[in-house]
Image 1: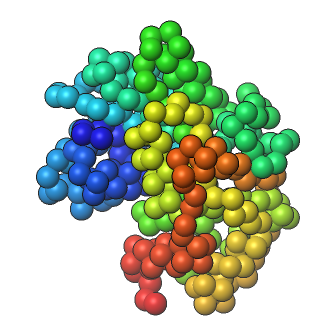
Image 2 (image 1 turned 135 degrees about the vertical axis):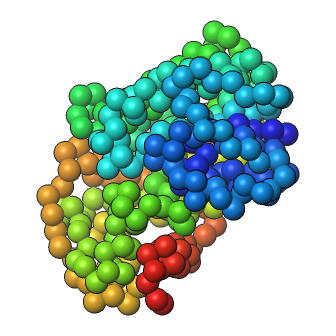
Length: 314
């Protein structure tokens, strides 16, 4: 990649992607309206050669001066707490925002990469989930603003590829964790770490038997970059085959933090998926990719960041 535009580049995942691209020698234009992203996430990048930050809302017409080789569309609220708080904005960025990013790529003759999600599979009836599975999604449920925004984004990306010949790829990202997650973003790992460090009960929803597959952000970003640099159109799952129940994850966090916290079970959200694990055989075959960060190492890395962020001594 010579010069990449990353929408949502000041978010958790987007900021790690910007950093990885700079490390590989690419110039990066980070575009973000800071609705859920933060300046702090990209502050370390501000002085690096080739980095530029644009405060823009991608739901409005988008232009970037100069040549662009890749447009990576990562702008969106990503945690349930955020997209339930911002339902219209989430639908707007998945629809009009995706179109604006696609049209930017078309004008620049750039390869376009859509950050889609495992949420397109909904509460899956097939396990693990291969890319050929169409999903089990409630189109009017509380999670639908995110699920359907991403599903529409995939359809629009495929239409630009088929009707206009645009070079596109779709990556379906599974649960990713690591430094720079907001302690209050509502997802399981930051919530559990914040509660454990405060000595509070860890709130596990339902009976805790529902599962997620968790992948360290460095592995996720490596897979995204490999897909962007390939000619593969996707959709392609990028995520860890390591699957863990929420009750077991809470227990691991308590052990790693040395906390005296207990587990408290609370009401489970509507349409919360019962299982989640990617079939990553396509990524292994097409990209030679598989995750390499052991779960304990990744969680300790994330814990170290949370201690600093929250001002908690080790």
